[in-house]
Image 1 (cartoon, rainbow, N blue to C red):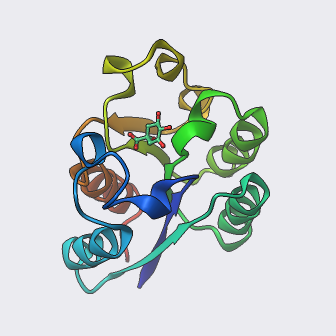
Image 2: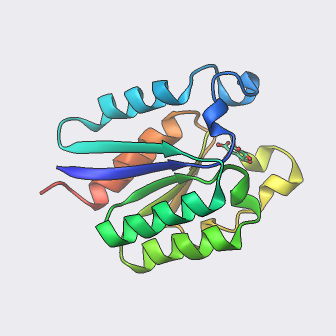
Length: 148
Ligand code: DQA
C-alpha cells in the first residue's frame, strides 16, 4: 500500500464557492473522493490543504522523511515562494516524485501567474484540466512509484 500526499495551498479550501467559473463548482471533499476512487486499492490518498506557508513546508519535510511522493498545488505560493521551492527541491533531490498541478491554466491568466518558482525543481507540471490535473498527476506518480 502506497501513500500519495496531495498538498494544496492557500484559498483552495474555498473550492466550490471560489471563482467557480475558473475552478469549478466542486469542493475539496469532492476532489478527495474523486482521487480515492481513481487510486484503487493499492494507493492511499492523503489530501491536505493549508493557507499557511510554514505548514505546507513542514508537510514537504514530512514527505522526505516518510519517502512519500507528492502532488502539489501550491496555489498563489507558486508564483513567489522561494521557501516553498527549497522545500519542494528537498523532495525531488531525495528521488521522490513531486508533480506541480493547477486546476486552471495559469499561463492563460494574469501575467503574474505566468511565473512558477516551483516548476524548475518539480518532476513535472500538469495544469489546466480541472480536477483531472490531479488524476493525471496521480497516474504519473503511481507509475513512477508502483506499489510493489
Ligand atoms: C491555481 C492557480 C494559481 O495561480 C492560483 O493562485 C490558485 C490556484 C490553480 O490551481 O489553478 O490559487 O494554483
